[in-house]
Image 1 (cartoon, rainbow, N blue to C red):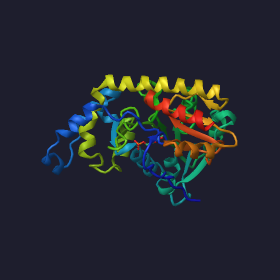
Image 2: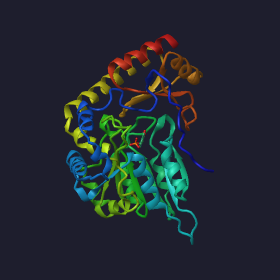
Image 3: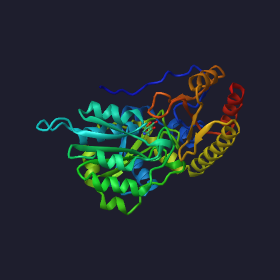
Image 4: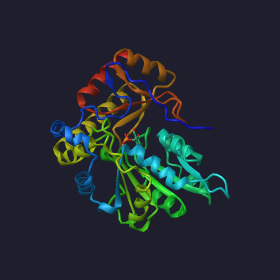
Length: 345
Ligand SMILES: Cc1ncc(COP(=O)(O)O)c(C=O)c1O
C-alpha cells in the first residue's frame, strides 16, 4: 500500500472552511513588512537570525532547541527521514499513526521507506492508549501524535503522551501541536520534555498566525534531536518573505488574541446551532468542528458548496462516516456558514 496526501480542489470562489485556515488573514503588520522588502532583499539568500530569535522568544524555547521549517509539513518530512532510514538487516522500520489523522504522517513515513502501522481511535474518538502501547515494538522508530487531533479536535491527555514516550524509547515521538493555540495544552515548557529527549513538538504558523501561504513552521525539542532534524532540512528552506513575516506576526499579539477570541466564539455558535439542529458534533480544542450528518454527509457538503460555503467531507477517514469538518474562524464567516447550513438542513 502506498500513501499520498489527498490534495483537494481549490474552490473558484466563496468561503473557504475546508482546510482549517485562518479566515481573517494574517496580521496587517505582516503585509507592512512585506511591502518594505526591496529588490535586493529578494535577490539575496535569506538570513534567519531575526526570525529564529522572534520564534524562540514567542514560544519560550532556547535557540538550539528549535528548527524553522517550510511549513510544519517539512518538519514532518524531516522527522520521517531521520527516524525511518531503512535498516537493511531487519527490514522496514515502523511508524505508528493514530487514525483518523493528517495524511502527511503516513505519506512521509511511507516515502521515507517506513512501514505505517495504523492504530484507530476508539468509539467516540477516545484515545487508544493501550492499543498504541501494544503496537510499540523493537522496530517502532516513530510515533505520530496530534494534539489536538485533526480531524476530531480532541486533545490527548498529557499522561498518555508521557506513557507512550516512556514505552517507545527507540522511537522519535512527534507531538504535532498545529492547533494547540486554539485551546489545547502544549508540551512546550513542560519539565517532562527535559526527561524525554526523543520527544519533539511541531508547530505551524499557518493557522493562528494566518501564514499558510508563506509556509512557516517549527519543530522543538532536545538540542541533539533538533540537530539531527536540522541536518535534513535544506539550508534556505524558509523563503525571505516568510522569514521577514515571522517577527511581525509574533509581535502583533493583539491580533493573535483577537483571532483566538473569534474562533472561540465561532465554536460556541457552531455547538449551539448543531445541537438545535439535532446534529452530532464533537467539542473541539482546535479551530474547526467535526459533525456527523448521518446518512447525508456528502449531500450536505455538496449543498453547502452550491451556496459557496466549502467544508471538508471526512467521510472516508476511519470512524468518520458522514462527518464534515468545518473551520471555525471569524464570527461573521461562521454566521454565513450557519445560515447556509440552516437552509440546507
Ligand atoms: C495536524 C496538522 N499538522 C501539520 C499541518 C501542516 O501545517 P503547515 O501548513 O505548516 O505545513 C496541518 C495542516 O493542515 C495539520 O492539520
